[in-house]
Image 1 (cartoon, rainbow, N blue to C red):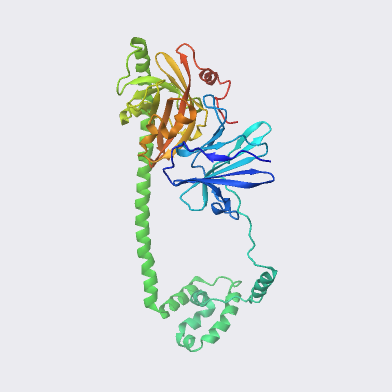
Image 2 (cartoon, one colour):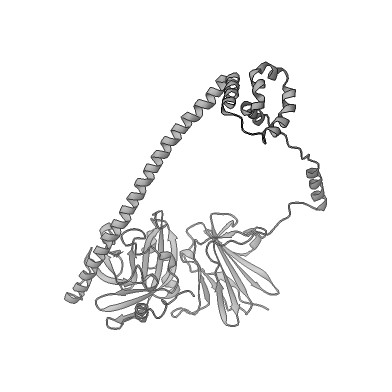
Length: 473
C-alpha cells in the first residue's frame, strides 16, 4: 500500500543551532523511510541507524518541545509537526496504520541523548500524537558478555581454579601484638621478633583467635604492654602519624566552621530577600492595580505611560500567581516588582505585532514561577479599559539570554504557520533560581470581547466549576 511522503517545509527559516531532527515514517509491509535535518539543511533517503543506535537507545530528556497542528482554523493544508526555532515537518494524508517517529537531539554526531521525541500515528479516528514524559529513558537492549558458550565455560573454569584461602595482611597482625596481653613478653624483646619472623606469623593466627573469648584483663596489666610496645616500636614513624592527623584535623575543623558560618549567612540572606521581596511585591501589586482601575475610570482612552500600569493579566493555568496582575509599561527592575512588565517598543494588546512581556520567576511575587506548567492552547487573557483580549499559547522554547529575536513581530516564522499577526510573548529566567537562559512562550490572538463580556474561562475559574481550558487530563 502506498502512502504520501513526509518532508521538511522548504519555506521554514533555516536552523541556526546544533539541533538535529530525524523523522522516520513506518507502514506495515513497507520499508522505513527517513529524512534528516540539521544546520546544513535537509537530507532525504538516509538510514536511521546512521544517526540513532539500534542496540543502545538514547535517553529522553525534556529540552525541546514539539507539537502537532492539525486543521488549524486559519491555516489549510497537511498535518504539521511544529519544531523548535520555526521549522516544521509536513505530513501528507497518512494511511491508517502509518506512524511517523520524530526524534530531536543536540550536540552529538550520533544521538546519545534525545532532547525530545514524538510519535504521530494515523488511526481510524484521525491523527494521534504520543509524547514521552520528561525524564524517562528507554531501556538499552541486553547484550551477553560472552562470545559463545565455550568462552563462558573457560571463564568459569578460571574462576573455579582460584583458591578460596584468604591471604592475611601483616599490618593488622602487628596491631594485635601491640594491644593483646599474650604478647607482653614478645613486645619486650624486639630482637627475637626480627630474628624469627616465621615463628611469629605461625603463632599469630592461633593467639588472635584464642584471645577473643578471654575476659578483659585488669587495667593495670593492659596499660603496661601498650606503652612498652609503643616505646619499642619505631618512635619516628609514630610521631609522623600522630602529629599529621592532628594538623589535618585542625585544618578541617577550621574549614568546616567557615563553611557552616557561610551557609548560615547564605540561608539568612536568602530568607530575608525572599520574604521581604514578597512583602514588597504584594504592596506594590495592590497599589498598581488600584492605579490601573482609577486610570480606566478617569481616562480610558489615554495612551499607556512609561513605568505606569495600563492593563491586567489573567492566566487560568497559573491562577495562584497570575490573576488580575498589573502590567506596567517598561521592563526596568522597578517595573517588575508589581507584576509583569511590557517591552515598550513592542505592540500593545490586540495590535498587529508582538505584545511581549517579562516577569520574575523567583522573588518579587514570582508571577512566572510555574511557567513550566503551561501547555499548548492554554489561555492568556489581557484586560484593558475597553476590551478583553484572549490569546492562546502555541509554542515555547528555552534560549540564550541575548536571543532578542524572540521579541520580533514574527519570531521563528510563527505568523507564517498560524496566519495570525497579533501575537503575545512571555519571557522569564531559566532555571528558576538562575539566569543562564530564558524560557519563552508564544501565543496568538483568538478572541476580542467588549469590556462587559467576561471570557468564559475567567468565569469558570472563579466559580471553580471547570478546569482551565487546555488542561491535560
